[in-house]
Length: 350
Image (tube, rainbow, N blue to C red):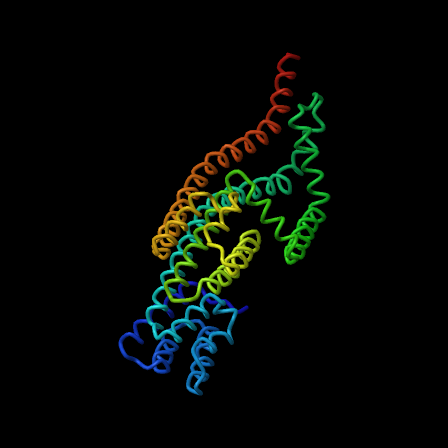
């Protein structure tokens, strides 16, 4: 599978910028970077791009032949830089943008590692008890001449059910996941799914702030590179993964094309673009400092996402620990209680 990490793209953009700024011809710079990159797929793509550049093709067109590595955002920043003669500056902005987005995604993934470990631990505990412990003690518990507590009956019933139907349950989960993936490819389904995610109390806010941060950072980079506003809005819509924001940004572009201001159109979507967001855009439009407003918004919402992720991680850790503790306590209680009752009844006979 073709995959190039954000770190490799950052390395490529930043070092290509430095080499061009140092006066190294583009073809020579590509040759140098090709020798420094370890990824085989990336190296192969750079060899093809280098060959195209030597034949007289622009760098942007060469990058466009490898869309799985260089998305439209990357291609457009380079294209504008080549046209305006500011390729080295545009590559530097591009490197900064990729780094910001990568750091944000890394923080989100890092916050999810602990919850995933706890959930995995809970699944392992339940599996070990279901397939190794319960089979050895079910017969003993059922043979006891005492009434089994509710917890014990639930444990025995659950263990028996899981042991008999675990393959069907696993197959059902895989089937549901497959159906979900297939339906997600349908644009209208994906739109309503993303809209539902935005309505969630905590995750919705994180998703909304993440989309606003990405839009601001992308728009800032494109605007700073000299791309026309209408084209920049189109690229921003393509760059955002959330279908709700894609649709609304396409509407914004259409209205701006008719002569309206960006801030005025954004005000029509208060649930996805807060009032403070549209007001900052308005300030930038009025003062002629839209670039500064976008940079401020990008940094502000990136900080909001960072804070929200830390809070989420701090909230989930004790909740999941309590959950695992209660699970272990329930299992221990279900096993020990009938044995304790039996011992008590035997001592009463004496």
